[in-house]
Image (cartoon, rainbow, N blue to C red):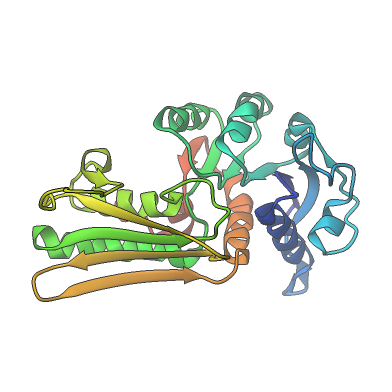
Length: 282
């Protein structure tokens, strides 16, 4: 049996954090070919004002006692873990990034909403440690990236491209990281720079649509987990590629899969397309 990968989770008391605990626990207790899967939750943390501090992470996630107390010290989580998973906020991720480099701890980052200069900090850290940084850890979404890229390349300039995304009322960034990632994948496939062609808002007298632009539309409401559509609109016809997530567990399972993969990698900035073999320029 493979050596057990010790997983730490930062932001463990949030919605995704609890799902990550459940996914890790499920993987750790799964039986395949007579052997348990090679991972275990060993450390967990959340912010100082969190009411779950001091409680067992497994009990908070509803999977039973795991003997892993939730703490506020991210540095200790980094030191005790073979790999750390983080779905929090940019400020939280960046606050411990240098410590992760110092401790040589691989990271799986599902945080979204980074500014361009903050992403450059991740790139710099990835020169020292392996990091999986992905806007979405769903297998289906990453397949969508690949398919939409190939469709865009085939359709060429004759079709206008729009990306529509919908999420729950609590999401704090817009457009979603997945929508931007989808736009980047499409733009790369048709030799466009997304920063140059993206249109994130339309209001008032906007004039005719720029032919090479990639538009984004955002919906927020209710408990929508995550819907994404790539719309290719031509004269007399349109093609839509849509992915709808009904549970955050698909993201959590993908993150645990990434955690088991990243520990064996050289320093570098990876995403789920590397893990799944979906990268179009591979």
